[in-house]
Image (tube, rainbow, N blue to C red; front, side, top):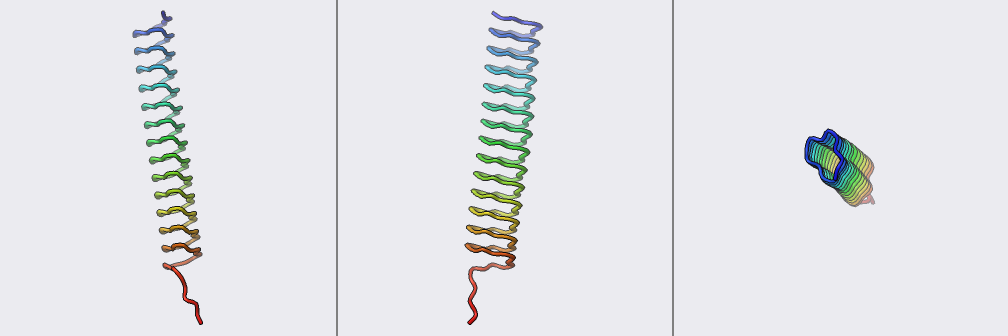
Length: 174
């Protein structure tokens, strides 16, 4: 129950053209490994229930293009690490449930642009340290629950501009 042309292996209930391995219930063109219930073109590894083009690793339930690592339930382009449930573009580290662009560290539940450290639940732009639950622009130290602009030290629960030291409050002059 098959149509085979230059097939080198066993094929059952399929249409195979130049296939080099066992394929069942699929359409394979130039595939080098076993594939089940999928359409594979030039794939070098096992893929299940997906469409893969030029993928070098196992991918499940995703569309991968030129991906070098394992990706699940995501769309990955040129990613070098494990990514889950996200859209990654040129990311070098593990990212979950987020959109990362050019990020170099682990980020969760946030949108990071050019960040070099761990950030959680925040929007960081050009930040060099750990920041939580805040919006930081050009900050060089740890800041919590505040908006800091150009600050060089640790500040908590305040708005600081160009501050050089740790400040909690000022004693008014009489």
